[in-house]
Length: 228
Length: 228
DNA sequence: CGCACTTTTGAGGGTTTTCAAGTGCCGTGG
DNA sequence: CCACGGCACTTGAAAACCCTCAAAAGTGCG
Image (cartoon, rainbow over all chains, first blue to last red; front, side, top):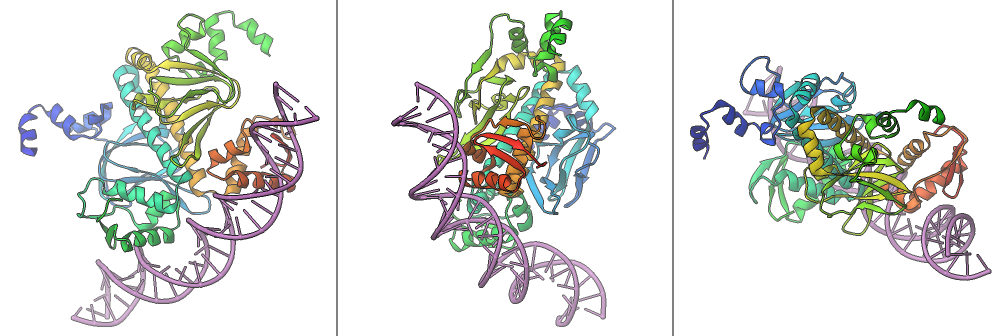
């Protein structure tokens, strides 16, 4: 399948479009695409685990589009605790607030190695003014983000610890076959932050799933035995 | 001030723009504006308390723009509980999911009498294709909504009952002078749903604020004595 | 005035947090 | 090669917080 794709994609534009999760969503923001074609300036950034794309309070001048890898969007509270907002996957956008605020309101950090396009906001705005179709694509992307944030609110506002953890585990393992081992991209603490729980609660609950035979654990590696 | 406005606004377009909270945000979605000028078809809807704009699961074919009044966006859970997502005020948009989903994911209900524009999604999309500037305005509106949803997540995910209630009360009373009486647009139950708390907890906590002398209560009427 | 609805208030119980100690894993350096 | 330290994870006990259930009091409206 992969080789077939390479054969078919003789036009570099098409090949990029099929491989780039951002463009596959219909978004072709000016600078992103220039980067995809390998022309300077390249707004792409490569990140290693724990590298940050932006910190809360930084001047917000870029919109980020995830090309590859997993990242998290989070916020540090006055008392030092951290609350995760959402997980970011290829194709997702971060830093939406750059369009309405002068500083970022979240920290975006890589969970593993990742590749991201950092598009200057004024390039986005310019693009929106000149190419109407882009407006629709970006509006759709944001609309999707709104839907996801509401789901996260349901999770935080109405579910027990067990339900929250079950849902995230289901989500994180959804791409793998039953019984296959996979390494979680998040530590227990990061999971706890994402779910608004205490570290201990996450650890205890995950262990209980394991005792009940739903999953098998080996440190950060996990294997789903029964559907969660 | 009101009479002065009427005098100045000789041009109907201007008078509408200054009076319409949606247009004041730079959004001039086709059908909305036609309605504002009093021409048919009029997509405006008038609502009384408890009237709903849409139910979860309804086919999602319109975007709603709040012209007047307060509404709430909420979701009913499988077990029958209700979780509020956010409060809607004039200028806010609801039903963003219409751009990416075929059915609404929330119920939008009026807290008091309200007036709303219901713009067909395909009119919005048409507008986005033909008038690039609209894209930017709509993207900004959605971006703002994302920021607000993240704030709501912080509230649900990391704050105590007392903090949550303090914040909503602060927000609801922010437009009034200290010491002035005002009627809350929400019942205790609705407040509880919005904050992911139980009715009893809300009532108890609000009473405690009153005992501590921060506020004075008389049923659903409230008066702030000390800054919350 | 009475009815329906909302709000207050109490007691008891369950879930989650906090705090703290212990275990296992892994890379570094002796 | 093994000892060491750091880090992530596990586990326990007590306490805090909030929920559930239930009854009584208050409020608004016909």
